[in-house]
Length: 186
Image 1 (spheres, rainbow, N blue to C red):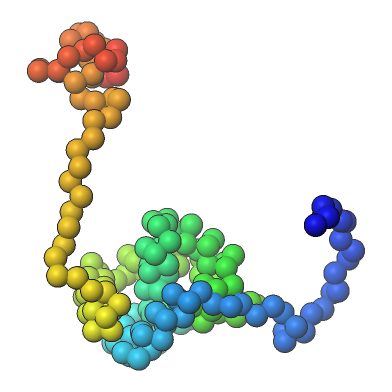
Image 2 (tube, rainbow, N blue to C red):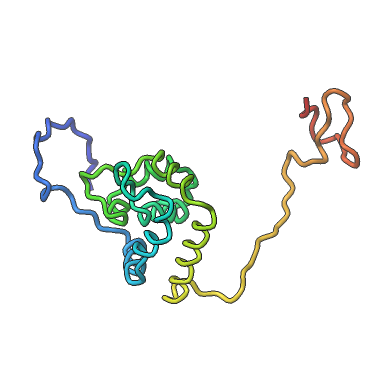
């Protein structure tokens, strides 16, 4: 195989027909999740559960609550706890756009939209909705288990408590050796 070289690109066409844009092959996991959620009326259930947090007619329509919770799922499944990070990931991924129902030309939600909705919907409703999703996944045999395990491994870090020494007095904490490190406290 020959070495490929990056060539300078010529000017792209100014207009591209929508049907000529690349189609995303959605991630199989997210496709299956959307299929299961649709089968169990997820979006309708979410809209009913969150209706009390929205004004009936004031202002412009917000991000659908089902999409807000899908964004949270993306953050969870992809190990991203940052609303800004989730928003960037969705804007950059054709598969995640498909999961949320956005076309290539649609604007994806901004992190501030997620923050506003998160503050609007109370914790109890979030818990109810996540419990509903867990029940769906258990019924569909996607989530299977009889017990919960907790990893309670204790590991001692280099900056363990026994090495903390007060700077002002030079004394270590009661019952703590000051051999490991010097003067962390102010």
